[in-house]
Image (cartoon, rainbow, N blue to C red; front, side, top):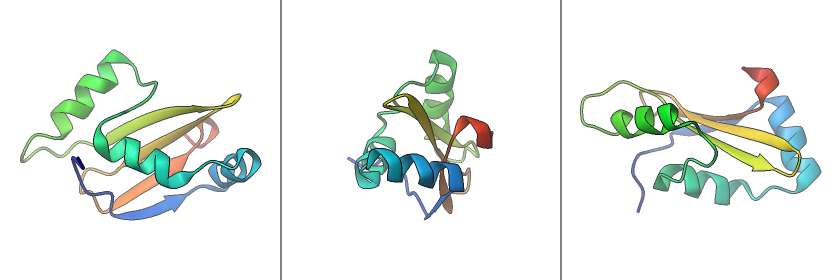
Length: 91
């Protein structure tokens, strides 16, 4: 079940590189993200994601997924208009 809207999907060049290198199925990552499977986030970030889903909150939703030897972050902006795939170096 989808918990929130993703909006427009964007990717940084370094995220595109990882996606291409490891043939990452982007749809699978986005499905996990919007269903509340946040991957490898900290307990604090998991809690913040939960609060971000409450009505009238303006918090981002963040997931972190291990891709082979790399990590991809998926971040949906507070207004739910943009979701960005990025890497640690993009932070």
